[in-house]
Image (cartoon, rainbow, N blue to C red; front, side, top):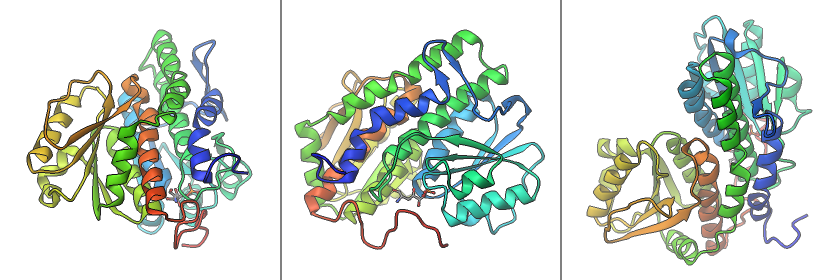
Length: 363
Ligand code: M6R
């Protein structure tokens, strides 16, 4: 039940500290500082990962890809299942097929998984419903522990998927000899900082947040920009806003701005920029200046201390200070809150958006 919350989505946003903690605990131990891979897979024997997913789970997969490649040096592809299943992809020997799904029932994702299994590839799934069709189909079942998600717009299942994928990337890095035990312990400690930082982000009832949501509610189009793991999170932010507020939104890699989308920029198109202070921060800031100079309203989500140049039309939403490794978990919250508050402002049916079903079991 909803308890004191207006919507399941609001409740589920608030449940993320616990769902993240529970999920991390299935893949890592905060006391020993070690990761574990449920089902006993050894990533040293895996040559490539092929992630198959739809919607929000696809964006979680993209965030996972950045971590698998950067930390573990493990090649990783991510594809939307509806394309993957019909195009006869040329997977190479040693590929692990990984289906990512909240429900474990999404028709296209399940079909992609079944296809990989029939071709003789090793299969795994990362699912929130542990008794689902995908859990029965895959050789290895990795659980997320978000608990039942009722809101059609996925929130806590997404951060649970990202938590699991980041922890698995650390495990893979260790098993493949890319990091030593001390670095594993350091990264596990960073991961377990996420639940507390998510709790801080969830408690943001700042005027800035409310005022921005108010403005977004009046927009026809909104752009989301980010670099690195913030790029898939930008696409996730755009999807969230579309789904529940019916505002057209696009997520772009900030570096792609000049290659087309900058033509859209005007006073009426707010631009939400996800910019944790990481190694690409300066580059993202220069993109901010480009759009601000064209009169756009820029909403910059970054930490309190990040040095941001003054620009007219630039507003800041403060995200908790965090290690860049866990920024996708922490920054997911302001992105979800913006979409949620904008939809509430517009008065849409947040938990049951038009035309959408929670689980897409037909293609
Ligand atoms: O159950 P699944 O994770 O397989 O569902 C995939 C998508 O249908 C789902 O993430 C959808 O995009 C959500 N409505 C996003 O909020």
